[in-house]
Length: 120
Image (cartoon, rainbow, N blue to C red; front, side):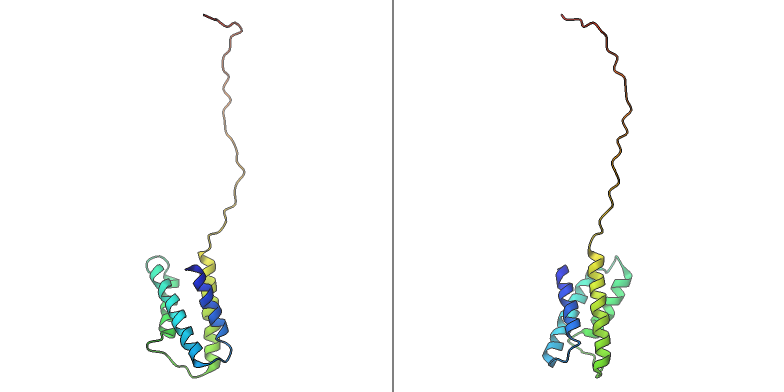
């Protein structure tokens, strides 16, 4: 599911080019679907991502589309949404923890030994 975020982001960047209206309908569907998935995942955890992707979902919904009529505005919006999707994907990747060198704290205990062994 994580890699669908990258696909949606790439579709946003491809949307900068002048393409037929069918592609932009596809773009609305895929971006709104990924926004809905992120909204469901982030409902109780991170408020910033939740609010951001609710706004993206409203802007890109294919059922009641919002028409802005200017290609320059949509280019800006597509770039911002593509970058937000990439940044969200980057935030999902777990960061590597730096391993600290292992130190062994063993207290040395002398075991009393006698020189003579008693054999029975």
